[in-house]
Image 1: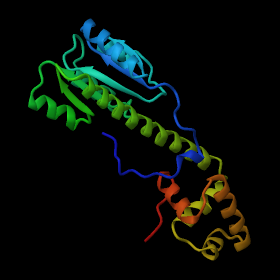
Image 2 (image 1 turned 60 degrees about the vertical axis):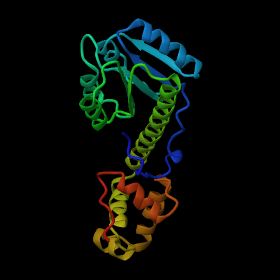
Image 3 (image 1 turned 135 degrees about the vertical axis):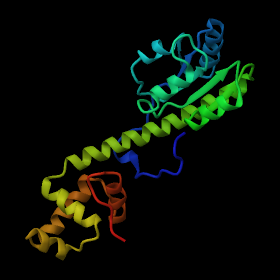
Image 4 (image 1 turned 180 degrees about the horizontal axis):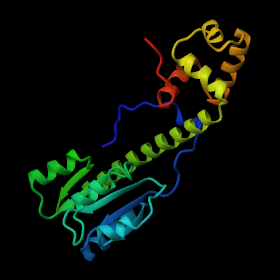
Length: 225
């Protein structure tokens, strides 16, 4: 599951909110289940994509729109739990809702520990699944926004000159302008000029804002206490 406590900088400065029609993937070898879920998903205003096997789903490129996966545990090729493991690192922004007619506690625990959004045993109420899908799609949207924001942040950092990156690293490490000037053998006025360019290129509104941004960049050390 996604970390709700994660609080990155304001991604809207770097990217737009994902606006593509959300996709609900269904992987189930029972055609009647696929057809029933297709109607349900369309009625909710989402785009259904249906697969009868795990391998068929894996052949589909990673989507850029918010998405979730409604997954049967028992599949003819790769079972649902193995598929969950397979896509865990490749598609972390895609929550998984398990559905099964043979649920048991160890199976449920294993799926939930691996990050499943929900585990439903057939038969289940349509409203329960719809609510689970709506929640999963919102989590996916939020994850995509965070991901796009981080891409924009990395691009902004990449636009800095080598000198500006040096100044950024020293600023977020808590160094004063005069200390930075002495370390780099330049004037304080030049340091201030570099700081100003760093702030503009990084779209930072304040020094604390810049420090938060730097914390998202592995190449930049965190500020000292």
